[in-house]
Image (cartoon, rainbow, N blue to C red):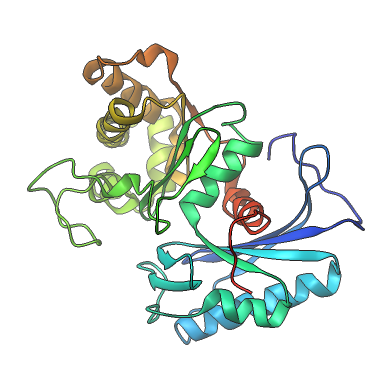
Length: 315
């Protein structure tokens, strides 16, 4: 992680727990906020338990939260990053596409809050990533920013006026679900031609002809032409999507994270080239397009920061 964040051995001042729920792993951090930059006190991850659908996942969330509260007694809030849609007022999930279970109406925030006896708030995982990178990572100092997460899906988040913008229902920033090809491939959201359908991990694997995204990236770095072309194509589609955002919002910085972002300039340079090709109403040379800095912990850090916020919480 970036040097702004340092591990500490003890804490007496208030701390905040952030949990990032993924389809493969569940990660958590305990974050302390003081007069200087926030510090990570503790972190960890386990394989997400989906054996009983949403119930085993929620029970695992509660177990992780309980364990953290026993170790760090000063925890004052919990933030939970979920990979999908949720109700920010009720703290219930609505649609979680990549974690098995029936997630409609599950009171995740209330159940965690009842165990921890502290306010608990939900946030989309890509919005949590964006918040963390803006405060502590590659987005530091930017007045406005687009965060992009590349993995199983394509997620996003927006910083406007120095603050995370989520809209009236927490869905603002859904970068991956803008239409790029009107009659393109079917997306998991129900639309056709979404950016996500064109640039997610499965789409890149299919183009590159490798079993996993990690192998696609390794092959591209090793000079494999087919793998390079697959990642370039993904970068071009992403560039079209970012062009749309720049024309509408003229953000200062674009931060790209997730496993596919390990491709680095093989992915980012085609993205920048599309901006130069398509955007003429604002100066694209004034927009920084950079890789993320916080690695796999960004989602949990952002969830902790969100949980520590001042907006209404469940609990």
